[in-house]
Length: 295
Image (cartoon, rainbow, N blue to C red; front, side, top):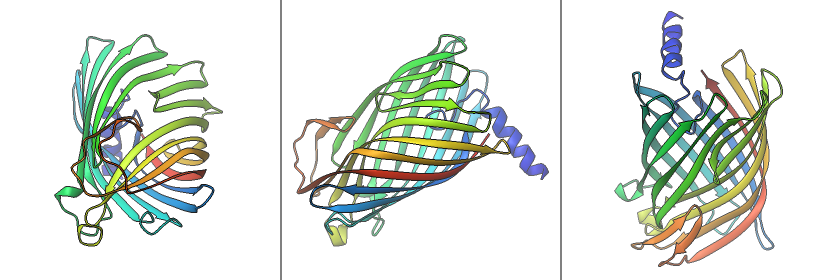
């Protein structure tokens, strides 16, 4: 028990300035399960996701903070054509370093690397990476803004994500936070234990398929969705969430293994040199349930 309390105190001190491993989340570890019912006029399928993460501190002093996150994700796509119905996985590590400039200004650098594939025959071609930077300004006790950009080396090419960050305590109960335009969140605190979150999210991912069975083809998944969820805090640290939402766009593309030099911003292509050999666009409902341990 003393070891547990000591570890909790150390992590609380490290994270007390709300510098967390990803997107300002104060959670130490967590797991979630998601289900999507995807369909169009001709097909109907489903996607099941299981996510687990662990945030960890690296270093902290008065001006500098460093930390990271280990993450594992399992994604199962079924009900579609066999070329698109796959079991996909990713295991990655995310690290960040933040420097405080004077009292109100901070710069934030981050990088991520991991394997994204069906995990049937993992090799160096299954790995991809991303990195970026953000600059933030603390205007007052209720408002912090910033801007930044991230670069993602996807299997289909290069992806850029310019963004504006915001953390605005509009009222004592209402908060606007996240990254614009790719991940804004509006949070309403119903009481000390229960909160209601509405968010819009954009994601782009690519997964390498088996070299021996699929000739190293890869899947590209672009997704825009909205979700509304309730989060309940138990005993101050345990958090349970339940959410329902809708996929506005869920785009799956299958590519041959080619040297790709496509360029995209968020999920939109502005330079496309290689074409997919198969593509399907769907919409549908989504459901998510999760647990996390927060400091």
